[in-house]
Length: 286
Image (cartoon, rainbow, N blue to C red; front, top):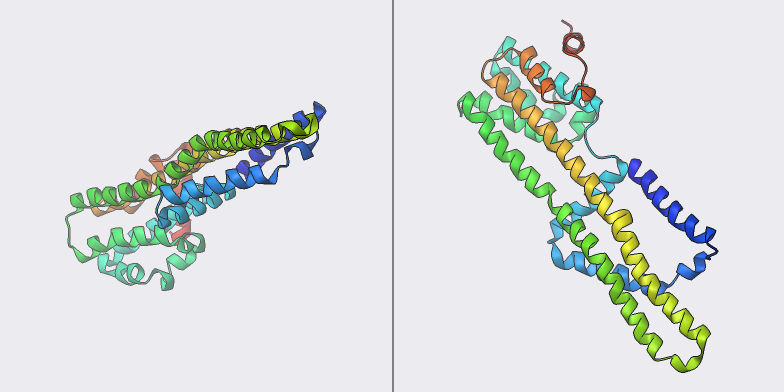
């Protein structure tokens, strides 16, 4: 939402200043320049990244427009679902978790948190983290390095769209100059056609430079930052999850394992320790 609001402010301020100065929007409308800049930019993106990264880039942009990063409610749902799983494992033994981890979509615990269940990546991470504990395949102190490796892989993959958009942001001013130079070449071919024709051609050429710089610094570069902030928030979410699961694996009480997760976050994202304890106990009925 804030990305859309900010974009409207950038667009409104630019257009408003241009009109206030006596300009007409039609002077900025030159489809050949837009085609050149848009087409070259698309080509640069296709050249610079493989297909899966380009798809991820589109998803990252859409996520940024919607408002990237977990919310306070997302963290509360995470802590509740982990607490319920930990309590079940503590009371009935780790094997009692097997049916929930093997088939989370039909789990009575996961179904209580549809928002969390809908995020397949996070559900898969949680279940795959608990699976080695249930099977007894690794020692508790070996779990966190395993989870860290998975988080690092996710972090690396999430950086692909940032690389693509950074390249586009750096390239767009130059692409605008390319469009402008093509316009100047056309202008040179009509020098015998009078001031009005020459002025129109130069105006079109300069609009290419303007458009490249405007899109780069007004939209693409800020969008990179938004996606990066969203990636950091997602990484924090997974780190929070891994620390809590690791603590439970080492034998920490469920409430303390979740408390460790709470302390990994900014105070604005979670309730106080006492409030969280009351929320967790009420969610399990005691």
